[in-house]
Image (cartoon, rainbow, N blue to C red; front, side, top):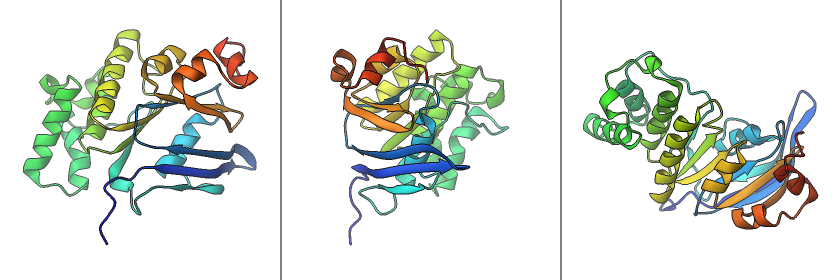
Length: 238
């Protein structure tokens, strides 16, 4: 039987996650299809990072399910974290590493790694030790490492949380470029301006529940719940 051409849609039904007897997420149902980036927003402690880890497969649900269109989506989706973990090797070696794990031939690994470094503006730093990069450069390297795998879906967990404005703009440009090339982005952020700039649709979490999943323009112009309205006014912090 031929494998599906896409791993989308991603369907979430009644998703819940409990840790140490505390419900972190509860009753989340949503569908992610092809399209512009999905931005997951909400107050601190709403469960944004936990949701991404469940979707990516790093955590197992306590309730409900996460279902992809393909039986084995692992090599067709990737995740970048707020604080990237880099190898004690060069920038190029970091970009090559996941490609080697994926079993690509050496020539293809080199080509993809170089293309990814060019995409994020790090081609000139290919031989530099990765851990000597600035924070923004390290995050761009993490994006390059994921992009080199050419994932259909890319999860980004607050990739700009600790970056200055210039580094944030650079990351946003990369995210927009990847989205324009067809990578489906699902990204958490605490920055409402960033969500306005990047989002095609918004998932609003509050106290572990998805209160809204709606097109971005509708969410920002006419939120459907009082909690979302309060959050947009800066009045909802927990």
